[in-house]
Image: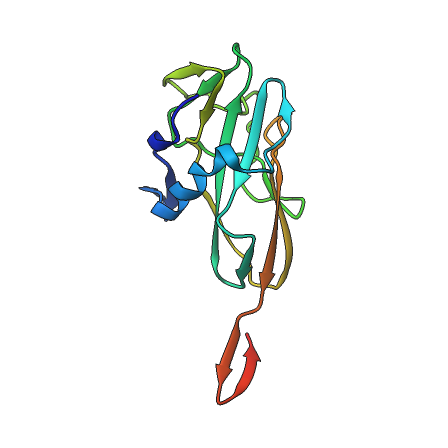
Length: 169
């Protein structure tokens, strides 16, 4: 299995690709012990992870994407960052849809290194969300026939203390 110390995670901001934060790298390194991995489908396991399952309204949340090839003949396309297609928030498509005929784990323009399983690929873009309303949000990655675990996030209103009064924003 590839070492998590060589993750090379990236995030897209304002059309630029930037290295991930140390916090995102730390979250990704937790994958081997993460208890709620996705189901095994066709030799692959998709898992999404995040730092916290409880956040405040307006705060950013980063979603790390991991693909594990469990079977020896399953290929991983380990160079990236690759785009994340078919990510859903509360059942609504929130990223671009997988283009027709596209492989769910590698763009058609992919011309990089492949690795046979068992191995782990962390080289997908990190998606970011901000939720402006309190509530429960469910996030799931579903490219093609593959399905990740579901992250259940609780978004709470900010509480501000002013002059001994509590205000919710």
